[in-house]
Length: 177
Length: 102
Image (cartoon, rainbow over all chains, first blue to last red; front, side, top):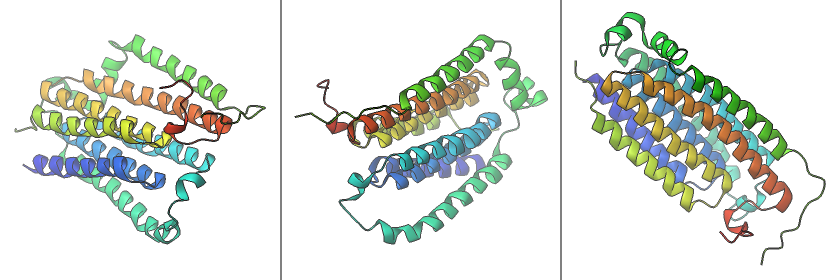
């Protein structure tokens, strides 16, 4: 029963924040909404009993990737996007409580998720070993080749990002009709 | 022991994926297009993990980990492309990149 309540709570939170991702206009608010979606989905992972994926979702996705998007937003000047309405200075006052709400949401996900997560009633092996050990053993035996290929893809992606994003000498004018 | 049925995960994942695709099509800002893509990827992850909880396996969680890693690589390359486009052309909207008549 408590699982249903937590599942529906996090699902509604995720869908509400997803509407924010699609419909908000300020890119910073969109990033905060995306962060809320990621944290809520981590809570649903806890409900489903996938503790390792939930922790990695919180650590890598919700922290690293979101910060990456913020970096790009600071690297690209968005004056053209911000020019049409100038009320963002006033609404900057609300950003701190918003971040506080996000932090509370993260704490909530950890506390509720650890309490609710089914400790492996699903299978004997999971009951005996725990989720992380089972995922690790199957990752390094059955999917070992895919694991190594993912590391190769990450290396190629890093090289490609550096190559694509490096500084060019000349700037081409926008000659589109 | 009552667990969440697969249909509940399906409904949530479907709604999130639909919103992600909708955002990919509707949005003009290129960075928010990428963020909508992250939304769709997370919907797929949610379905993987939900099906795992339903079937009692862990293979889907391994694939969710792969999807997270590949999404990080995709974000790096995509944001690099966006920065390169902005640096070369000084545009930030998908409507202004029409050289290939797409």
